[in-house]
Image (cartoon, rainbow, N blue to C red; front, top):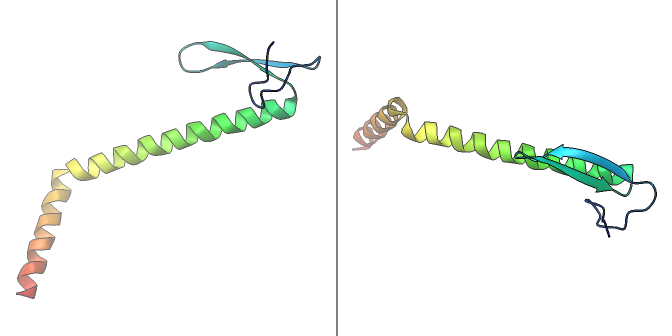
Length: 86
């Protein structure tokens, strides 16, 4: 028996069906109500936003670490700070 993609309840007569792209192929998804379809869509959008924030944060971190200009400034500032304290 087919189940709702969001709440995993039994599908009745008022089935909402959507074809969604999951990144590799189209997937036929069925929902028991329009409420479940809306909740599923919000969940997917939140998951995608979180994934992109993670990717962008990692890219920002990797450019900060590997940027030679920032590394030179950072070592110069720390050397100046240690010279000033001694």
